[in-house]
Length: 173
Ligand SMILES: NC(=O)c1ccc[n+]([C@@H]2O[C@H](COP(=O)([O-])OP(=O)(O)OC[C@H]3O[C@@H](n4cnc5c(N)ncnc54)[C@H](OP(=O)(O)O)[C@@H]3O)[C@@H](O)[C@H]2O)c1
Image (cartoon, rainbow, N blue to C red; front, top):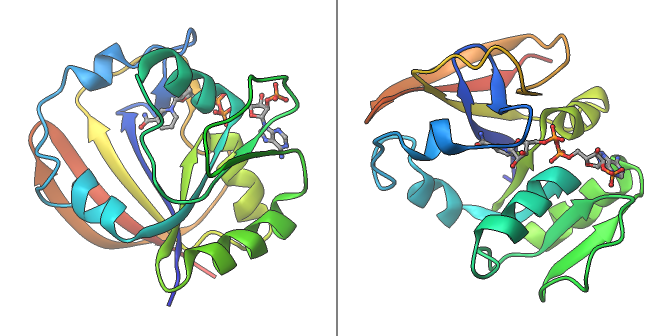
């Protein structure tokens, strides 16, 4: 059954990026992408994904080519250049788009890439099933928040991968 999963890395004090959207503190950390709760086994199970405009802008600025093969939705009000194939821009309510994502994902999972406020919009509508977090051994003091909501979660699994403490949580209904 398809799950809607927020899979991300964070600083210990709960930030996805510095205030100026740097991920240097994260990308310098040792991790085994094929290891426990690693990116490779995770992305193999993803059939559709969504992200906000700042995350999309980061990818445009730092990746040579679009890194995903599955259908992707970018929530934005901005004017971007025409998107890569399979990417669509939307300013619609997340509830309707979630239905489209489920249909596109088939029997695979839906990945909410971030940021935290966008994921919060899905959580507000009861559409978030799981949160997978890799905690980097860094505090940032400020930045883009992990998930700016009150949300109760059940701890399902833990792992140690490189420099990261990894937790998998199920959203308590
Ligand atoms: N640590 C990690 O693994 C990780 C994971 C993901 C992201 N990141 C980084 O964390 C930062 C996240 O940035 P962020 O907190 O600003 O979040 P974001 O979700 O990437 O971008 C926020 C923007 O998305 C647009 N947006 C959000 N909800 C919308 C909606 N319902 N309809 C239309 N547009 C909507 C708005 O932009 P406009 O209205 O201006 O278009 C909003 O300002 C980025 O630097 C990203 O690279 C890190």
